[in-house]
Image 1 (cartoon, rainbow, N blue to C red):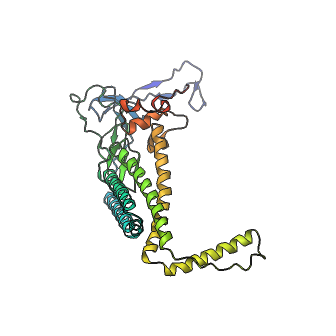
Image 2 (image 1 turned 120 degrees about the vertical axis):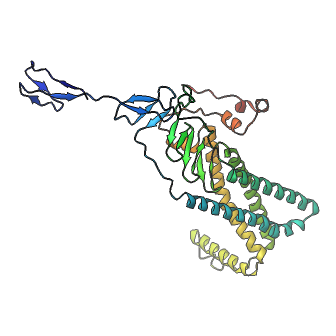
Length: 359
C-alpha cells in the first residue's frame, strides 16, 4: 500500500476532522488501491475498488455482487408437498362441482325438454374440458426455465454474451435480467409473474397464457353453475310457510324491515327440514360458485391490467415511483394472446392502432 505524506513547509495541515495539526508534525493519508478479482461470467481478472458492492465485467457484461453469500434453499420439499396437496384438493373440488352439478341439476333440466337437456349437456362438457385442460397446463407445465448458456470460460463466452446477467446464489448458475428465482419451485423462472397457490406452480413465460385461459374458463363455469343451481334449487325447495305479520301496524321503517327479514329467515330455515339432499347440494354449489366467481374475477382483472401495462406482478412491485419503462397499449394484450397481424387488421381501430403517449 502506498502512502503520501503532507509537506512540512506549510505552517499547518488540515486533517479530515478539520483539526489543525501543529507545525513540524506530519499528517499521513492512505491511498487505497484497487484489488484484483475474478469475473464469474467469463473468468477474466478485473480490477475493482475493494468497497464496491457490485461491478460489471468489461468483457462479458456480467454483474458480480461481491457481498453475495451462498444461500441454502431450506424447506424446499415441504413447499412442494404443500403445493401438490393444494392442487390435489382443488382437483377434487372441481370434480365434485362437475359430478355434483350433474347429479343435482340435470334431473330438472332433462325434465324440461330433450333439446334443452342436449344443449346444457354440451355446455357442461365443453366448460369442464376447457377448465380442466387449462388448469393442467398451468399447474403441471414448466413455468419457463431460462435457456442454458455457456459461462465461466473466456474462450467460450463472447463479448457481451452475459450482458446484465447476475449469478443466482440458489441455483449456482447465471440468471437472466428478466428471470427471478422462486424458492417454492427451486428454480429461476423467466418472466415470472408470481407463485400461485391455486395451481401450485409459478406463473411465468411458458404457462402465463394457460393461467389466464384457466381463469376465464373458470369464471364462465362458475357463472353457469350459479345460474343453473339457483334455477334447480327453486324447483327443489319446499315452499316457505307464509306467516302473517300481525305487527305491521305497530312497526314502521327500519323496525318493520328487520321484523320482516327475521320472519323470512326463520321460514327459510324451517323449510330446509323438508329439502332433499339434492337441494342442499344445490345450495352449496350456489354459495361456492358465487364466492369463487368474485375472487377469480378480481384476480383476472388484475392480471389483464398488468398485461395491458406490459408488466408482470413482480416488475410492478419492484419498479420505483415514476419509473415507466413499459408502454401501456392494447397491443400488449393482442400479442399476449398470440393474435397474428392478419387477425388484428379485422379488429376495431382502437384495438389495432397503437396509443400515442406524450413524453
